[in-house]
Length: 223
Image (tube, rainbow, N blue to C red):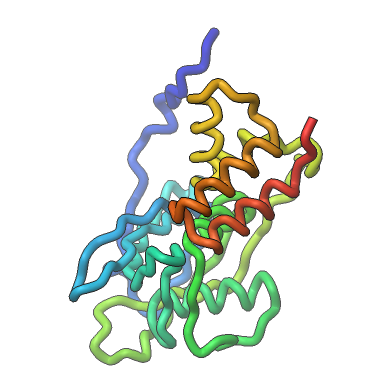
């Protein structure tokens, strides 16, 4: 039987869904975390990134949908968190819990979105978040402070990771991979590196994105 990705009917039941603007200070939410892709939108003469975090408690069939809107810098593919803001509180507390950095570790945060999304979706199994009051008196939503994280224990060894695995999680590697396929060239680490260098030389990707893709390729061995 071929798997067409059809979800079993019992898994499609409605969850009790709560949105960020419905949460009050002092609540605690816990469950599986998924970060969605961002959408770049124009605002006030610059771009902002809109994306969602979804925290799902499958046992109690509850879901929390949290919208983030942050300044976005396409030249670096980074989003920005200003001290005291919703994204700042989330990323600062997440870094504190996972990496034991001090709270308010940086004055403000500049974060590569695709690296953040990849790390959250591939490595975090479950999170517990509490709602705290925003220091901004005009804020209409609570801030989210991470208080506990469960990290996946990955079964794959570096040698078993394929180029396709990397391409699924890195859009720059995916672009190089697709270009090789379209040309009918062999999909090897060396050929992907060459395609990445061409993208970089043609200024189709940033230096930061290029270096990140090369770092990812070092996880595997060319056969």
